[in-house]
Image (cartoon, rainbow, N blue to C red; front, side, top):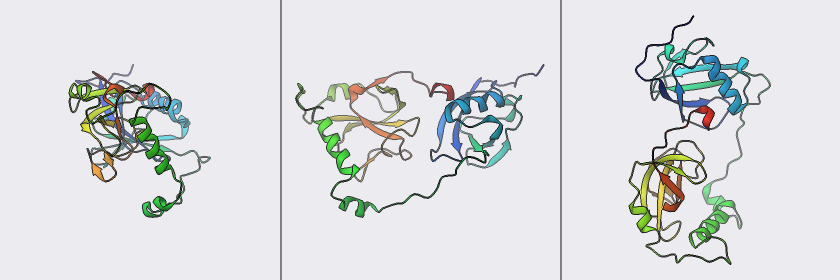
Length: 233
């Protein structure tokens, strides 16, 4: 019978990267007593990769290669995984089409287009900040809108947004580029946001691209919300 690893903590947070996806550095909690085979099965459920084609690499905090996680019956903890390390997924399925270079346009040329998603999004955000859908009873929006709610939120608090996303509060205050009143800037655990803490050239907080989001104070709940593990996402 295989003995488990001797560790002080039963879980570890690893950054997950994938060779066939554009997402970067998703922090996932893993159980050190989890076998490599079961991790591959979780990856199959989440991303659809066939476990027999999956190859896992363990890298240190600087991205240096440590070892392959190539024994399906071994526990993750036996490979010396530590908080902040990276688990890189390589899908060797020959039927997978790799990412191709996409057509790009400069910000200046994009802004010159008579209609573009950036302009539509700005109009939508301005409408939201002004009270939502037309025709409904709207609260008065002014420079102090939701100030009381904002003052109850501490920087670096863990939180969950109403839509279910989790993250860490990085900014509380006004964001005039979005609208009047107070907003909360959040660094999300997953790249499901809309920015990197920068709004129209003003850096409210620092985080990787698409990990940042701004919401109203009444759209989040502050509390003990740990990083979700792979099966919970």
